Image (cartoon, rainbow, N blue to C red; front, side, top):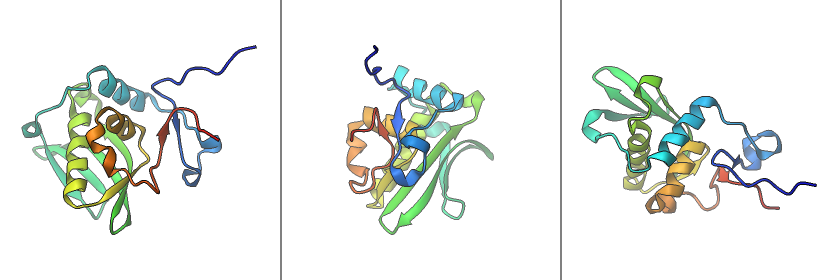
Length: 154
């Protein structure tokens, strides 16, 4: 007889409306690399001067660029006038482990705050960032928080 396993840094639960079977999802290797980056070096952050963040509202993505090259992005949907659904972050492999993900998430959440909006977090990497940076927890919409950490409570 074995007891429940302890939650790992890769255990996330999705709300029913996300339509993940059983409310759980297996993270990709790319996602685990970014979560490891956030958790293993939580204070690493690329300088804002290292890249520019542009909100492409038509495409629904905050793009991090160096010159004319996109190096990372955080996609989103507009849920209503007051809320964004943060879907997924990606960082090109050669730019990982440099704090790009951390700084991109920080700049996106700062922009959301400046607009007076809230977020629903469907991206486990963004959820991990917020859990480790509680000053951003107030941006998560209480009615639609999105993905959560650990086993679902009945």
